Length: 172
Image 1 (cartoon, rainbow, N blue to C red):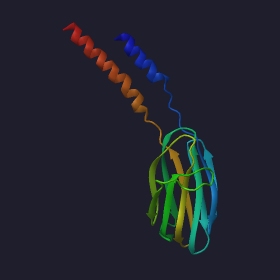
Image 2 (tube, one colour):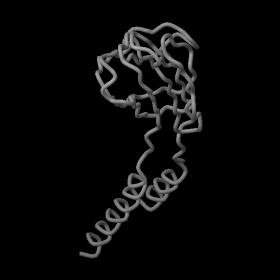
Image 3 (cartoon, one colour):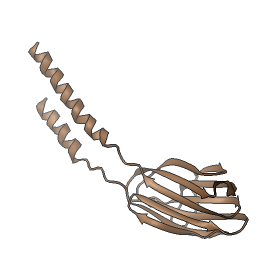
Image 4 (tube, one colour):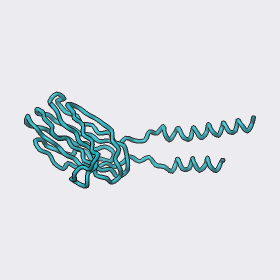
């Protein structure tokens, strides 16, 4: 039993919790400017401006070096300037590629966020299309969702309680 517990404890400490390195690339826009402002490890930020009233779109490619959950947020300033848009997210065939079946679409009228899972070294499209608005600034933020530290603290405590319980049972 001791060997099994030692093995489990050693296994737990050998697992590293590294945040994924995300890469966001602007691949095109119409009616809006587009820029990737921060492309730094587990958080990437991009945005642009819409200078005229009318329709516009902005498209990005997203990749991760590690399988991870991400939180994706779109925000607009001023909030009321966006009259409607479609956010499209899903796996694509490669850089600047077309969407594979199963892509998600969300119809939005303001700030919007959702979570998604990214597989390692797979290309994803992250687009805002069919957008209609007045003059505004838009921002998109993608950040990796880390594994909570509590998970790695809970397992050793649980193993310790199991060991105390076994010791009590043997003593009785």
